[in-house]
Image (cartoon, rainbow, N blue to C red; front, side, top):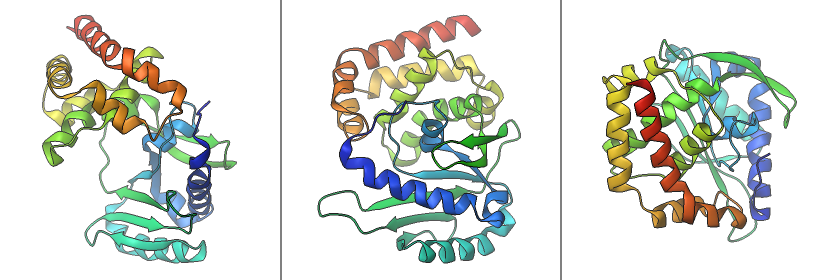
Length: 244
C-alpha cells in the first residue's frame, strides 16, 4: 500500500481525475501505454507517492492529433497548460489549490518504444479502469538506466531512482536485460558495474533525504538516512556477481 502525506491528497485527486479522463477517452487510451512511478504505485509495484503521469506513445505519427485531444481534455476537466514542449508531448499543467500547496503536475507521452518492452492490460483499482501498462520487469530495466542517463542529459541525480531500484530488488523483481543493453550499448554486467561506481561516487544520504522527503511519510525518512544507500550498493554488488 502506498502511503502519502495528508498534504498530497489533493494532488493525487487531480492525478486520478486526469488519468480517469484519459482511460475513458477511447482514442487516447488506445495509443498511450502507462508507465513510470505513478503507474508502479497504482499497481502495487512501488510504495512511494509519485507526482506525474508518464506514458509511452505507441504511434509517434499521431503526435499532433493527440496534442489536440489532450488540450480538449485538459480544458474539459479544468486544467490549465502552464507550459508545453512544441516538439514532444510534454505538458506542465496547473490546477487550483490552496496557497502553498502543490498546484501543478507533469504529463509526458514519449514517442519511443523499445522492442524489448513488454506491456499488458492492467486493472487500476483506484480509478476502476483498465489501461495498457509496462510490466514491472520493463519498468525495472528502464529505472536502472534512468539513474545514469538523467545525469548524462542534465547533470542531475534523483533520489527517487535509488529508492525505486532498492524497492524492486528487495521485493525480488527481475528486469529485462535486453532493454538495458539497447539503451546503454553495454552488456548488462558491465552497465551494472558502471552504475555501482556512479552511485558510490555521486549519491549521498543528504541527497536522498532532500529528494524523497516530499514523496514519503516521515516514518520512512529514518530508513532512508540509515539503510537505503548501503543496501542498494549491496544489492547491486550481489546482482553483478550473480550474472557474471
